Length: 327
Length: 204
Image (cartoon, rainbow over all chains, first blue to last red):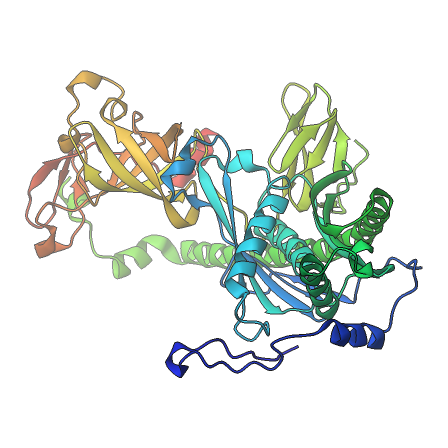
């Protein structure tokens, strides 16, 4: 995954070094053959191996880290701030701003990074807007930052999952828990949680079929990607992004797959958050017990002093108050 | 309500808590939808009996919780700029919670005092740099409207105008004046009658 493509350097007179400037159809064909293909119909709708942890950073209030297979994402939610842009003032709801950034080592293709960052940011904002109670921070903006540490497909859905956890961790009111997942179809093979290579193949396929004559057999084939974010309490879909060419039947099929996966992810997120709440509750209790102990200790000291003669103690330790003396 | 009192009930956003009835008041961290009360935060469910046979359902989030000044809250603010009509402040503390970033507050001339509102002069009440106690009236776009029209609200900490020489906070000598203990300069201020915490608790 960590191949670095040299970007075009103007100092080098336009000379650029690229490992694979073009991939021919034949090559991608070969690559596809080398993949271990899933069955035509996926038998089990399981998400990838997932690791989620809320509150990974101590310096920020709401943070979450998520590993979804090899995709690694870190999300940070800061408390609401005053609006910076004056144009958004007219809104009668809080404003949500998402910023997605790739870590320098997080992706191979550096050329397309700014574009992808912008695209992911806007998509993430749209997905999270329905879930946050935006009426609670009127005329304020909520900044959500996402850092992508490693990219192995399912970026948007992982980012949405991670942000959902971070929001709850920060204590921002949300209507529901949000979970998202990705599914794609390519040459009649349904890939759940496609890896970066498959996603790349899809893009290549799309750009090729655009330039090739329409009679080529591959363009007539179904190929496409669906990302669905859902909130299950009210059976709502927060966002559904689709690209490629899909027949309605396939669309519904893929949608059902993603929704099913969302449900199992939701259970996972629930478990993580419940554990977190219990953990923090215990910490709170311990803190309370400690302060109570401290109070008790001080009380005892005061009691002791009273017995020894408080007056004496004060007279010997505290300077006389000039105002009192005057009276 | 068949909630156990000893075992804390953990809930997550979107979890249904109970049916919404007339006797149930929505507390912090909850919202109502389709006749049911749902949680909007993760935390521990709290059901408290309040008067009038009402029950307040709220969700308490352990650890950090977000504070935004709400109407009616007493806030601590620092005066930044004074003009003849209003004083701009930076709110840095809500009730007893210190904020991470300050919010803008606006104190209008009419809200400085309860009586003789028309004879209030901002420059005789506040100076930039003073620390004041104020109550939030409402939210005007991005700034919070504040009021000090109560005996307990007003300037708490203030330095004399030439404070660079002394660095000693002034001492209140009456409800509208403060005096520097070193230079004995008297300056007009809208002084707060600061009550010790014990007496406030006793009042409740």
